[in-house]
Structures are given as structure tokens and as C-alpha cells.
Length: 491
Image (cartoon, rainbow, N blue to C red; front, side, top):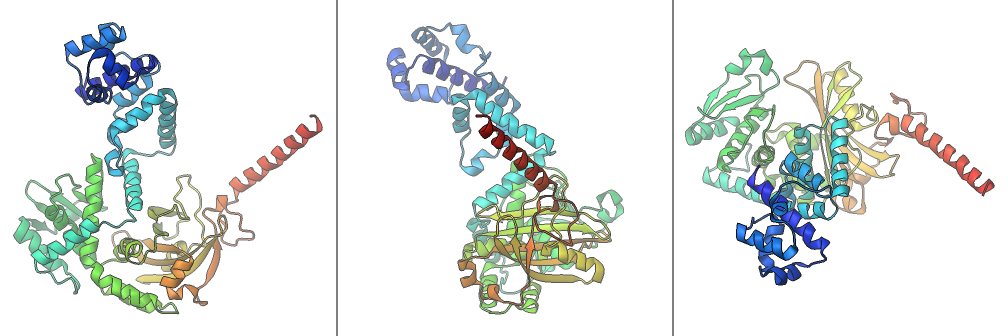
């Protein structure tokens, strides 16, 4: 039995006995002669009393010594024991959100049966939706990003420190060659461009890092922006001194939340290095002053950085909430195989509020009126290298309107696969003041839903499934209306 678990159990039992006797900590302190602060630390599981102190507590509370030190719990505290033994609290990155484990244990101790039922419900929902440990960690990370408006000033500062230390001119595009030189000369890396290609099982990986020999294995078919991004991430791991890290890109598995968090920080560092804030902000200020939307100017701005459209859109989610106070936005990444009916939402982020649309795990049909879907459909037909479009989407369920920009490109590593990256802004008075082309009448406006199964848009030509949830809801409302009528007639 872990020492920490024994301390927690003893503390919970002591608190239960004390409260059952209507004793405050001050009262127990007067009764047994032990200090209030010492008793508080025992109850919080921070300290385990020595034998003589347990004897004093046993006599003061009139509880047998063996009962106090036993790890057997009564029916009220048993659910807490199950939670503690399951180590589920260790899986939750509580400290990331400023929560102490002891505070959560206190909450559980106040109403163990109810809280245990609540936690069990969450676990059951997660299991029903096949929510893995990895998915839980990623959801926690998204919440952390959203809580900080996806801007991390300390990482931004470290990027500037790095650029100064290595004499990198952030006003010019960074190449993979200059980053590779730093990895080799400064951090002792060995770059291997051949080995990954020999293993078909690794087709989904762009890189593998072998820490023992500091060998970085790379997919030889990578384009320049992706190679630059991977090099920048490797530099971040070293410059930021992260030992807990992931060794593959994309990730296969991770052992701890620290690995997930450090992977995010390294990616953030890479994006901030390749697309510097001091360069991007003035460009966006100029671009937003246009009263009409200029797609060629937007694409040109993206092309000035040695970065993929996804990296550029991701960087916008860092900069716009911080420097332009555009804090009501969402980011979506879709993948799609040509000829397939399904579109897969692989990544999402919602700043400030839970903006529409939300990902769903119910195998429903995403609205085909989304610009994210339209650009994917178009690129599979045209075979263009980059399809870009803009749209104002009015959500039927909320009446909220979003200005949405979307870029679709081919997946360079999988034939017949495509991906779209989109960023959407809630249309408000603030957005209209910051982004003048928001009221450009040439930007098409469409009424959209979230999924076909939940959409009430009538006569939708793009509909792929019946609105079964709405049909079920209307049937339930009719049933309820008849029951209400019967209640009134026979009362």
C-alpha cells in the first residue's frame, strides 16, 4: 500500500470521526492537546501521526486504536478509497488548472457517495464514447489552451531569447538548413534521411528521434515547411530543456500528461519561431484595414513564411486573441479521402466560449454547407495545390454568425487524401471594428447546421441524413402535450 494512500485514508477517517462528533478542528485541538495546524495537515493527508499521537487521538475521540489505523473504510468512505486506489486523480492534470489534489479530496469527502456517482458517470460516458486515456489528455490540453486564450507569453519570450542567442533574423523566412546546422553543431544531432523509407509500417510517421544516439530519422518525402517545423520542435525540446517528451511525429502513444504538454509547448515554440509575432501582427493590421476581402493578399501573406497553411492558421489562434482581442473564434482541421462520403474532424480549438461547431463522436454527418467541407470537396475535383475560400456561416440552432476562412491542400504523404484548415470568428461589433471587410457584401452567406441529424434547415439540398434527433424531440413534445392535456382534464 502506498504511503500517500495510507496518509489520505487516515486523514479522511479522522475528519469523518471529528465531524460525526460535531467537533471543529479547534475543538479537537483543545480536546487532545495537539495543534490545530498539525491536525489540519493530518486530515489533508500531508502528515501521518506517530504512534504516541495516534494513542492521544484514540483516547480523546474514544475510538479503538486499531480502528483508527486500519485502512478498512466504512460504507460512506469506501467510494473514496476506490477512487484513490484507481489512481484516477493522478491521471488528471489538476495542477495545470490550479487545483490541489487535497482540495478535490476534501470535496469528495464532504459527500462521497454523490461525488463517486458523479465520477463514475463521467467514466461511464467516456467508456461509451471510447474515450481513451490519450483522448482524455488531449481534451485536458485543449481546455488548458482555451483557458489561456491559446497565448503563452513565456514561450514567445523564449523564442526571442533563442533568436538572439543564435543570431537568427526573425524578419526573414527561416530555412530548414539553418535550423539543421544548430541541431548538429549545438545539440549533437545525427540526421538520417533514409531509414524511415525502408519501413512501410512507418508510413504515417514524419520523424523518429532516438535519444541514446541523438539520431533524428526523417521521412525523405517531406516538404521544406514540414522539415523546418520538425527541426524547430527538436530545437524547442533542447532549448527549453524538456526531458519528458514524445519521440515520434506524429505521436503514437504517450505515457504521461507532461509529454503531451511539452509536445504542445515545443509545437508552440516552433510556430512562434517560424511565424514571428513581431512580423505577423503589422501584416494583419494592414490586411484587416481593407474594406473588401482580398483572397490573393491573404494567400500571399501565408506564403511569405516557410510554413504550411495549418501552421499559419494555428499561429493566428495565438495572435488574434492576444493582439486583436478577437477572442471568440474556433479552429478546425478536417481530413477526407476522395470518393468517400465521410469527413473526419481531427483537431479543434474554441477560444473563450464553446463556439459552434463542436466535434461529435456519434458518427453523424457534418453539415455539407460548411466552408471547411466545401473546400475539401472542391480540391478533390480540381486537383489544385491549394483551394481557399471564405464564407459567413449563420448557425440555424443559435442564430450566431461566423466569418470563416478555409484552406484545403492535398495530403503529401497519402495519395487521394486531403485536409482543410479553417478559422472562424464570431461576428460582433468588435470584429467589425477590427476587421473592416467583415461587412463586404461580396462574401457569401449561408445558413448552416452542425450535423444533418440535428439540423432543422428545410429543403437542404446538401442533406445526407434525416434530422432524427429533431424528429424524436418533436415526437416527445407531442406526447408531453397530450399528457399535460390529460392532467388538466382529469384533475
